[in-house]
Image 1 (cartoon, helix red, strand yellow):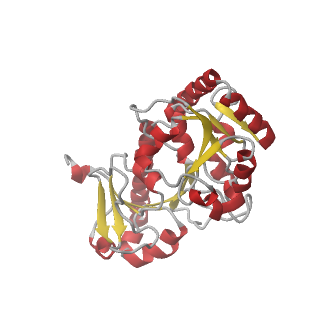
Image 2 (tube, helix red, strand yellow):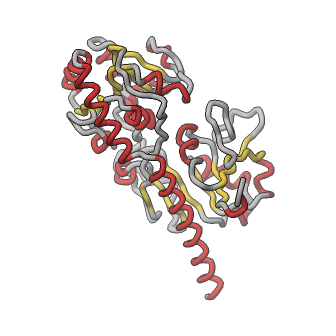
Image 3 (cartoon, helix red, strand yellow):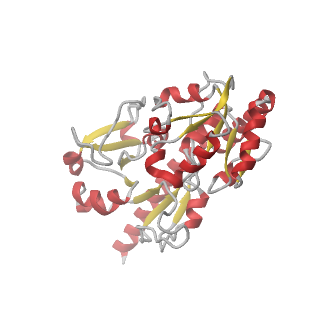
Length: 331
């Protein structure tokens, strides 16, 4: 790779595969620690199912201490509280640090203190809702909204007169992910669900990430029954494909979907059922809303904006750390 040594070197863990794939479109070198034959969280490295670029490098966890990095990017409590002390040297632990928080607070939606409480670490949230709800302590924060890649070979058709739900582990995760909402709606509206463990509720199982957009594009609308979690990448991807979105007006969905433009959102499930029925019987309206969804996604979730945000963030954190270090030396 040309100018490889000039690119920023970032160590991070494999926590959320789809997000990591989009993150690695940033013009940096990403080192992923892995443990051969282990299922331990964060140590999967370059897993199958994604067309990883040459800038994504597997490194055996025991070899991490031998490498040089510009920044450490944490993505889970385990990364921050355990992993850094197990695989990094003391010198590496003094490098510029970013904690990427993927979720809203779980224990209390308003009073939960974040695990990071350090003015020398940047806490990056993926939605403004998440930043608003967490107690971020004395840690500086920044929001970098999602970015997804548009598959130009896939266009919305809506030929299948059904709704599609994309959720992993909906039974295990229960009410938070809207299991009860899904079941209620399915009694009145034809719905299919895909994702890991979806077979437990009569779903179609897991669809390969690279084939999911084409699969979803055939359905009349995308339904998001989730009560409380971050904005799912599957929602962003469906929008980018031109699929109209119907969902609960909670968390970041309230600022992502515009009624009568990109789909319908409401906290009244019965009202949403009526909108679903409307789209099932009006393919032209569904197509119009899908167009609005795509226009919104291109503006809000384009990959260039996303990767530029991340590159500027890495640069800023690294430069800031350098300035602080020089000030300490001078004093």
